Length: 412
Ligand SMILES: Cc1ncc(COP(=O)(O)O)c(C=O)c1O
Image 1 (cartoon, rainbow, N blue to C red):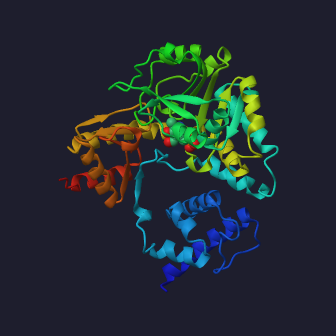
Image 2: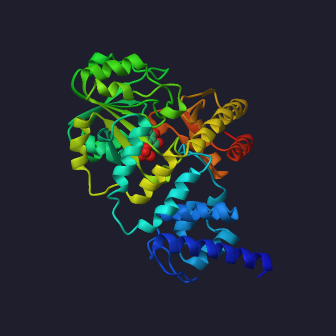
Image 3: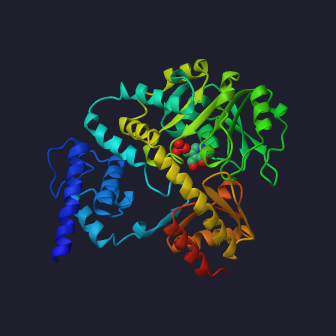
């Protein structure tokens, strides 16, 4: 083994060992130890990947850490590459994740709290609930932290027999409704992706699930239309996952006069914490209190709570993401428009863009061939938009890879 390689192996082992001792509560680890057996999960793997990046400047995809839990094997794969998969070079523009990494204060907070992993998050959860409430300008009693949007939707579905949601729209609500055997009714959108139904169509015991801005279309619905729906429907779930990327204010001020309105706040996008699996339901105290009772025992874990506490305190990181988005949005739009692959490219009020192919077959071919070149984008066929492709606004390196891959496309 060359000296450089040997010293890099030693450095990787040192980082693995430090993270294992800090997060897994072990006294030491050797080359044969299997980190998964010792308790490695996706959050600890994230900490390890971030530590390798920060301390050694090595980018190790989370999947590589999780798929190679034996210490020696992990060290070898990091150095020599995984002969099976090109995952380390794969460009992911399909999940709208933050292109600038996790907030440094979230990572620091995770490290700090790792020593409390043997405890339930008894004090931490109320503490983070207060911080989340302060951030969104509501009372702590109005906030319920959940295990992502799915748990939030599940808690609400308990009380409703059927839901109304837009198409094309986020498929997560209908998926959870199917799991709970609830009927799903569609609110159609026109070709500018605006609702055609008048708000009065939802009067009575209707439960309406909307994302503002919407996914995958990326646009805002008219504020007056949403407000009027909240005036007549029994329950309105308004998902503000992408709101921070838009020029629209939150609907939070309406909560005071509309106890039937419940907002969802995600930490996965503008807060850069998709791996933490933590979100927040925000609504009138009397609406939230029964949901709190219904939730599973500590369904949000202390590492996710710690990372959200750190992210909330990291205003610099949010500002950096905003700056990045402002510049990269134009660069991504230009690259998509000048590629001559698409019939139309639409800007959005989110962290992704939309590109329309001439035919559905075309969009399937573009998605597949980009993937073959290691660039993943999201085909929107299962959202009901078969000609469209959704492209997350990622890093500038990812943009280079996307532009090169688009230039090399050979379409039928
Ligand atoms: C509209 C919408 N809501 C929620 C989510 C997921 O939120 P979380 O990661 O907080 O569960 C997504 C993910 O893409 C989304 O598009």
